[in-house]
Length: 476
Image 1 (cartoon, one colour):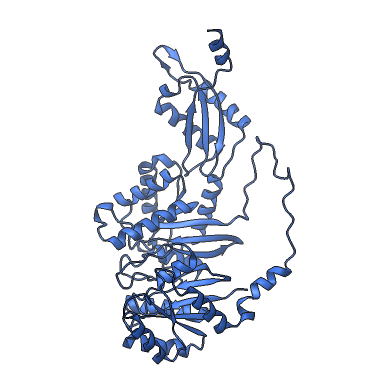
Image 2: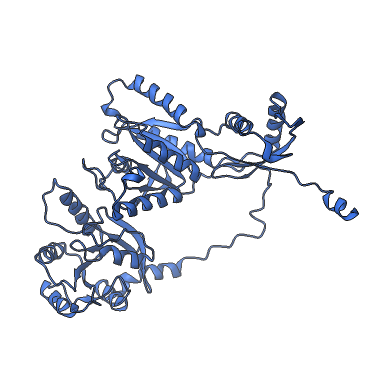
């Protein structure tokens, strides 16, 4: 059992920069604008020989509980309660402010061990601000530069002193007592290459939730996990970072990624919003299943279709959630209309699963997760070569490929070369001359025969190699 550290402080003191330094990756968005971070983010961290979870938080601000800043502060207070140790950050360059003193009192009342971290200590004149840190009564300030990695050895020693060696290193002692797991035997993973492996329901699944601003993505994730984990509200564009949340549903380990709302590219002008969108695109590439959240009152805007097309091009499994279903007056009629539009506007993923939900009331969430699991199962589909070629023989006999320049194309065999998403190779004479309409015919036939709805299907056409070509060259 490790320990967790929450990084607390007023806006723009460098909390996210230190978080990225400890996590070893640029996970949190960093900008000169105060208040970039809004949600709390948790990630495994390493500080030399110390291993722990670090929590990035929003900047502490004095505001009413109903305001956005007030809700951000509530998330930070939750982080304080959950953490074993607090890094209280101040800006050594700017010195103490009245807000620092106010928030230091809140941290002191929590009763948690505290390490006072004086960031930006490399700046000229920072020594005076560093000395002011003693006035907070939180112990000796540790001078660091999160941007340049200075002062981290002192920070490591301060953590050990605050928690004690037994608490800090207890994980390593447990590891020493754990019996070694036997290595995989040579040949153990060898299997019939033509077999269709069973779907593994024990492996964790990564799910990204995307959509336009104010579609209800964060509210949906909060409803799924049953707690106010992510910051929500009536304001559009609250989420900025892509926040990952670990969750378990019916015994299946899941990692949910909340992303910033994505507007049309022409409307994204500010640097911070560009960073948020780029972070969301990375979440899509990292995910296995992507839920596109649509506002049921204004569905299928051009941006919604572009997001769905992006997911298909990235080769991810797609599920559509029609959110805010509680606001629809004629649900049966509206659902039939939306499903007809889905089939018409997204023909490249015929059979995509679309589920009406209400994140506000919790309606339809189980059906949504059933759809996600089904899409993931289909995305991992593998079909044996024997079954594929039996299907191909009947399909080509029913509808032969067209003749090109008076010569009929000959399709020889088909095999599946990959999953996630399913990818097939078709062996054919003159592959460049096969019409796209015939390729679509084959792909649609695959979908229908082998039940592969709603996920991208890749079809690559190659010419078969002539085994006698080298002999003919030698005769010449």
